[in-house]
Amino acid sequence: MAREKKSFEKSLNELEEIVEKLEQGDMPLDESIKIFQKGVALSKELSKMLDEIEKKITILVENENGDIIEEDFIKD
Image (cartoon, rainbow, N blue to C red; front, side):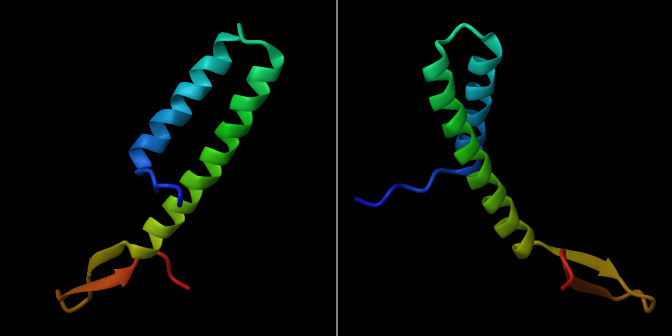
């Protein structure tokens, strides 16, 4: 079965929980490594989500004539 795509907020919250657990420093090493790897995977997933979002964002800009125009957030 295909993995359900998580929302950005849910993934970010999960990553924050992983960081908190690792910062406590009271887990066995092998468990710490497992959740660290999960955190790295989540970080990559979040980065991809942000890249996709940046591509969709347009900026409203006023040109020299006073007209409002749309521009891409990221210019190629």
